[in-house]
Image 1: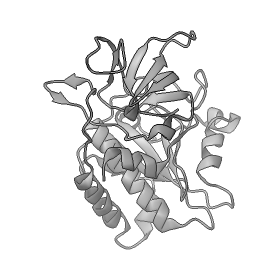
Image 2: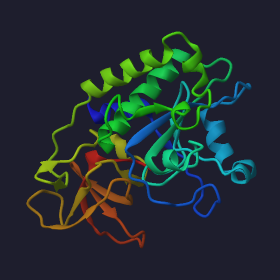
Image 3: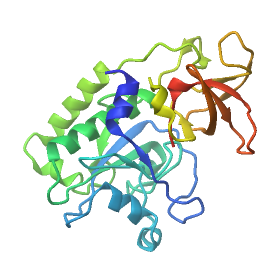
Length: 267
């Protein structure tokens, strides 16, 4: 599976905890591990959207809890950028080194779909952040001894089966050829999307090339590179010329240059 196809399948909705909330410290994270959790919430309606909403509320602030992604059998919800620390591991070391993924366990959940999505998301995050698979994929239990992820731990062979699926996805993930990824350390960084013309229906977009994306003075590789945009950078698309998008990077209404549109996703 190409990385852009994985993004399409996961359909990640960014519903970030507001900056300044006490459970979003804003501390920079360079993740070397991924921590897997279950939400431990088996109430009706306790799906990914509900947990994303919860993290923006008063109780989550009071309890000082936050995590990066919540997975159910629908779109994945992202509550924190992957380069910011979340408070999910119950351990300073765990929080300071890992991305947190919570898997829902609400009634009516299609568990096969949910765990398949969680495994794919884990593989994608490992791919983008150069996290070792399976060594860098751990249970919440690893940090504190808590019985979490409870569903995977209590299912015979559950954790092992999950890791096998992550390994399979990780082995199958492929980069895509594109003319304008930023080159670092003499090789192309991974990440991207093969968005169609209709893929830029929303003006608000984010860069999904993990190594960054070149900003050019015109719509083609023959134009000068003026700067580069990092992974996760937010831009406003002003127009589209073939495979190129004219973007406003400063949100002042003016055009700042062109990027290859296949490495943008709605943000």
